[in-house]
Image (cartoon, rainbow, N blue to C red; front, top):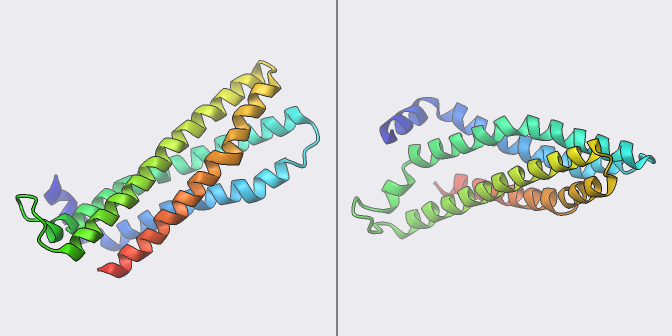
Length: 178
């Protein structure tokens, strides 16, 4: 499998890096647009039921859009991490560090991967809460729907935006490191 990833990356490097960056841009950019544009617009709707329904629908559309990009991001991250040989540059076959600088880069890659993983888990939790809000709306329970959606808007999306921007910055640092 490792050889396959190395060979695939060697032959499709530009496409893989492009898809990785595009996926990050769509995911993080989508959250920024939802939080700072759509959220503000939805807040202007007077009828609370309509506002909550529109918010739940808007989030559903966002999550449907970004899910394939999240998967592409994860796949391309693995392809780049293996394909660029960061581990081989940092450690020997026995796991001993052979180059401190390469090891710091290798560790930074793991930090970036952990950030995307946390974001993915948070995305799953947002999808669950959005579905819960939708079910509450269908039952006419506006308060439960509001509470589920408010947590997404106030905390979960902003956390993912901050983490995503951090991961993108780390990606730029890594790109300049080798």
